[in-house]
Image (cartoon, rainbow, N blue to C red; front, side, top):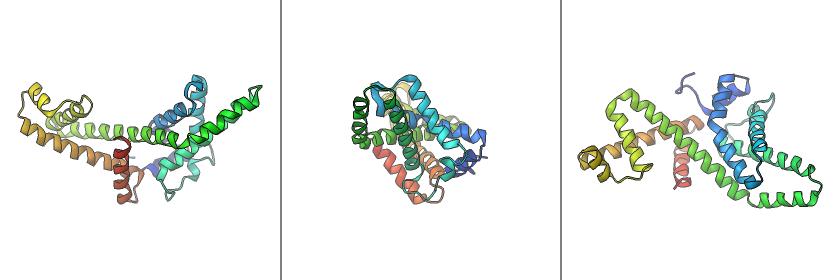
Length: 227
């Protein structure tokens, strides 16, 4: 299935039906957000093996027969991001309950749980930020892919965008390095930003195939999260 034909929901339904390729694609897309939430939730208490087990359990919960993906609803408020957040949170709670039972001091172990619950707003923000970063990486990958197909000038605009944002270099410094006209680079930079936004919108349409307006709103929300 090509990128243009695939949406978040076609991938989810294929993964729920047992398609190994789509399950792998699903895990690759969302693992970073899952892991970031668990690390933020457990902090120094997180054991490496427990963290790995919980991350895998999120995907087991998603993929098992009659599991979470089979119940995913495209009309759910907040889209799939909110749905996945609920799954991760529930798996974390299950691990914490299991952990408490292994302590002789049940009161001391259980006392930490309300503190985690009280911090849920902050944890939601951690998840949203990790989600946003993953989306931005996919948009950047898509821009590089398209640039490679379009030729050297497009690829140079991708590099210009990287130097400006990742390395925080002013356009005038890049122009000096490249021995290029700063005015021309400013125009190329503006074009590179438009190309990136087009890629970001395409990635968001993957998650909101039935609602272009919602895809636009989500783009703005992601940019706010990462500001």
